[in-house]
Length: 241
Ligand SMILES: Nc1ncnc2c1ncn2[C@@H]1O[C@H](COP(=O)(O)OP(=O)(O)OP(=O)(O)O)[C@@H](O)[C@H]1O
Ligand SMILES: [Mg+2]
Image (cartoon, rainbow, N blue to C red; front, side):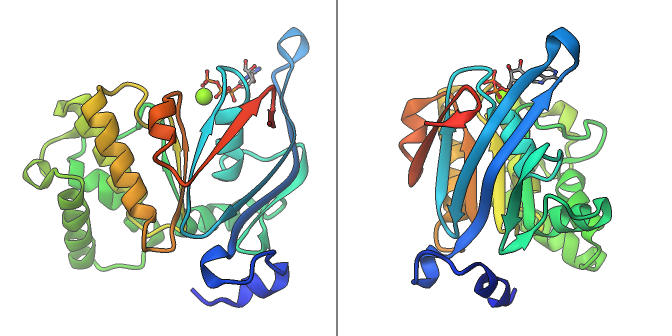
């Protein structure tokens, strides 16, 4: 990746480590129709820097998942803008956004959404297939390396439907890291895990950020885990407080 896109945005900080990765400005999103109509986001501003880990906390219904879907390019804002690495992406075409998402972003969903009939390794290889940059041999090697990093080298060939909740969540983390994304978005990745596995998943996501220039943004209800991130961002009623 070149540094060129950054020059367009005039980052507020001057050192390389403090370079802007993602900027959201005035992001609004209303969901639902008629009586279900809800202003989920009411003009969110956000600046994420490279190589940092962020926790988002806030009460149920305050808009955390809605925001993550927008930042993950899985949904579009009604108004406001989102740029990643200096590139305005909220108004880009679907094709461009999909390509950008495959290249730049990793997403860990709360309920992981693995394909249960596929092996753990195949699940981790899926994003690599979509991006289409590696040979089969390279994909096998990289997915094996990631599986080892998440402590599941011995379970690569197991179908994910036959793994424990914590193991499945670790496969989801490996899958999110498959294409070496600049930003990993994780929506309550430890929501259904015990304390030991929660720490492990957090540790994995944190170490993914440290020293790689990659950033992670993790939604969590667990204040103790949030303190493990470089910064905690608090949301309430569709805004950061
Ligand atoms: N499809 C929808 N139609 C109408 N309202 C919705 C829809 N999806 C979400 N909402 C509402 O938007 C608001 C924000 O929802 P969101 O899922 O972002 O909350 P959250 O902060 O992730 O909550 P939680 O911690 O419970 O996961 C909530 O009030 C929710 O009820
Ligand atoms: Mg949520």
